[in-house]
Image 1 (cartoon, rainbow, N blue to C red):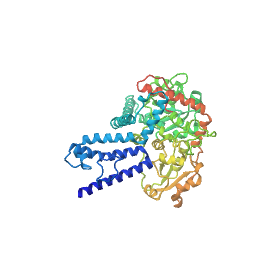
Image 2 (cartoon, rainbow, N blue to C red; image 1 turned 180 degrees about the horizontal axis):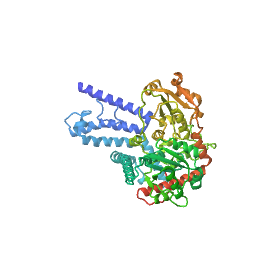
Image 3 (cartoon, helix red, strand yellow; image 1 turned 90 degrees about the vertical axis):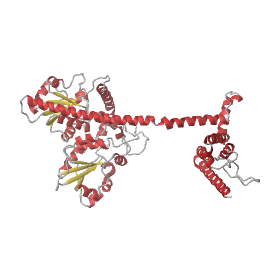
Image 4 (cartoon, helix red, strand yellow; image 1 turned 180 degrees about the vertical axis):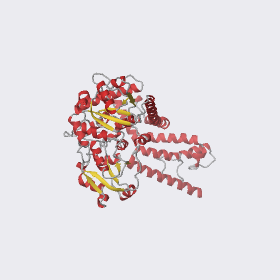
Length: 574
């Protein structure tokens, strides 16, 4: 009696599960999940269609299942058990019987019948004889075999390419880190050689003065890293800035003018002295002038070729005089790359849509992801440590000033306001907002540069004492207390203020305003990211051609560097 009650309860539960699964499948996922539920139920020895407990007039017991029939055939004297037979009786027999039941169920299902009728109708109209038409069993066997093969392949090999790609990416990062370490070691050895050579000549000089020149148009952290490397070869770094006229004559008009480029270079903490108005091509006369005027020991430039439009080496005179030294180029960043990102921006980038209109002033198509994701530069902890040289914790009693923002595409307007902010205290902390925050506030295209690139740009500025990475959008009381901030400042002209207005500031600086800690500084410059965009869009065709030419030159440089055939480029890294 107990066994009968247990068996009946088992079938009632299975019947309920079957009907619930069947109803859920039909309502939400259709036939596919119904098949999956059927497979699960078959694993318990019950077919989907035969799971219902149907009482016959002559017997109170439910009809035998496929598993029970299999168990009875294997052991005629034993009583078929609902579940344990399938597990402990004869598993191989159970699998064969269950698979046959499953295939038979599929063959008789309405979706398969409709599919076979439709296919055969098409084949019949195409002239295929009746004996060659498909049957339900053939369709089901083909589908099951195909799905089984695909699933098996996916489980065994499907993620192999993902694992391989991840492994190669890790090896690439490790290799690039090793290259950076070797380059720094070579720079250190070269600096020692320079110091030894100076001592051997008996000059007893305490200073080794390095000269580096360039256009430095749209100056970025790649230029700053070049300054850092050049400065490591000596004790003083003097940087010459090519004039607008000489740049225009040799490579076309720059985006930023003499004063804007002078502001950027002067604001870099790795630079000791700036010489404006330098010619683009360093001839013998000018080389003799700078050596005498500034007591220059060596002229330094990146290891990429630097040629004039007529194919002459810009630094031929310095090389012939034995005054030339090269430094490794900062890979993964260039003005070409940054301007290329800006060319994909739209003037309505704050609208979260992929649709374009006739009024859209974009140079190229709209991008769906932030442009900072196009960056190829890999920021390592070692690079951050090298850029943080000279940064120290504030001493007790120092007046700590705080200023935050996106600081996207670090430009002359940023440098000007940061200098003014530093003048208000002894220690300036700058908070840089994360990519997701900038993207949420400014729109789908921005930021142009990721948070690591923007952090390095800020760390290279001489007016900044510390950088708060991924700073919060709102300045809180806890933040003020933790960093010992005595004043929070913000400029009157920002990259986003003209679009968000006063409400934007009141939301960000609610507590500093309430506590009387907030000051709005008059911006010394009206230069912002919109200024650059307007200049690019005004001469978009010229810049598109220039960018394409620069990309080809950079491709040639990397081909030459890594053992492939290529051509010489232009004055790279600028």
